[in-house]
Structures are given as C-alpha cells and as structure tokens.
Figure 1 (cartoon, rainbow, N blue to C red):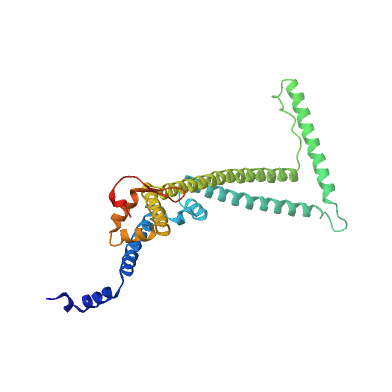
Figure 2: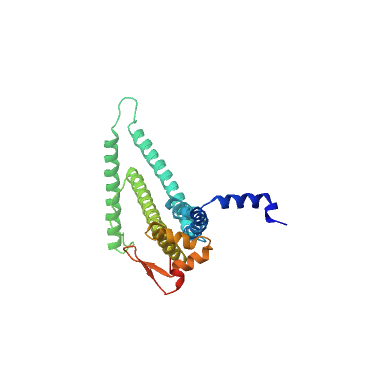
Length: 271
C-alpha cells in the first residue's frame, strides 16, 4: 500500500515538496530550537523541591512562628494574660484612690476641708504614732522588758500606701512588658535567620550544577544563532535530537569576545 493513500501523509509530502531547502532547514531548526529552549528553561526554572517562593515572605514566616504552639508562644500568651490582669488591677486601684480622695473633701454640710489638708494631717498623725512606737519600744528594750523595736519606719498614710501599691503594680507591669519585648525581639531575630537560611538554600538550588550547565548551554546557543556562523549552526543541528545538541554545545566554549573555542578536535564541530 502506498504511503500516499494516507491523506495526511500525502498533504505533508506535497507541502514539503513545495518548500525550498532553506525553508526545510528553517522549519526543522524551529522544532529543535523550541525543544532545546524548553528543556534548558525547565531546568533553570525548576522549583526548589521543598521551598516555595512564598516561603521567603517575612510576614508568612512570622505568622507561621507566632501561630504554632511552642514554648515561646506559650510564654508570650502568659505575658499577655499577666499584662491584662495588671492593667485591670492598676485601673481599679487608681479608681478607688480617686474615689477616696474625692470623698475626703466632704466633712460636713456647712464647710469643706480641702483634701490636701486632710492628707497632710493624716501624714502628721501617722508620723507621731510611729515616733511613739519607736521611742516606747526603745525604752522597754533598754530595761530588758521587750525585744528590739526594729528600725524606724517612715510613716505612710492610707493614701500613700495605696499609691505605693499602684506603683508596685506599675513596676510589675513594666517588667512584664520588658520581658515580653525581649522575647519578641529574640523571635524577630529567629525570623530573620530563618529567612536568610531559606534565601541561601534557594540560591544554592538556583546555582546547582544542572542549572549552571543549562545556563551555559543557553548562552552558547544564543551566541551561535546570533553570530557569523548562525546559518551553518542552524543547518548542522536541524534534524538533531535535543541530547545531540547538548553534546555538541558541551564540546565548545565561548570566549568573552564571542569567539567559539573547541574543547576537542571532534569532526562533529565542523560547521
């Protein structure tokens, strides 16, 4: 049976017969160059086996670290709860002190004593009581009737005691904020180190031997099809398989000036 009984083969044969030799070479070159470019670009752009471009996103890294359960995130949650409790406690203490302070001014219906004067009187009274305690205790200890009275303690009014409690709560809050900030700073450093590590791994992947070889082949191919020997190169590789083109390109070097340098004396290099 004649191959021309197949309509597709027959039409293809007619078309090829109508083409000039140059057109046939050009058509074959387009096929091999397309295959070649697809192969080398696939190798160059091959994605990392475990990392994705989105893995370099700092916000994603930060989200992944802060949204996993570990000792650091548990500690940060604890700081957050402690901070909330202390802030609520301080607000409550300040409100109670303000309420008590305002009530001091109400001492009768006919006149009002300024809160500042009341606070000074309370402080003087507390000071007198502490002096009396210390003196009496010292005398009794002198005559062997009691133990040491202990050091003299500066007297504090109820308002001053409340103020001290607020200050202590504020100090504790600042310690929590400072500790929380230190942990977060350490986490941020870990995020940066993780980011740099991933960048390094991707850079190493992009410069793996297979990718470098593909880039070298692509560069040689580009030089040859744009140089003085473009026509002879196209004619030589037309009809070749992709692996044969690779083998051919691996046997030559390209100088910085674009000159083709042979790595061997193989006759297959003659163009």
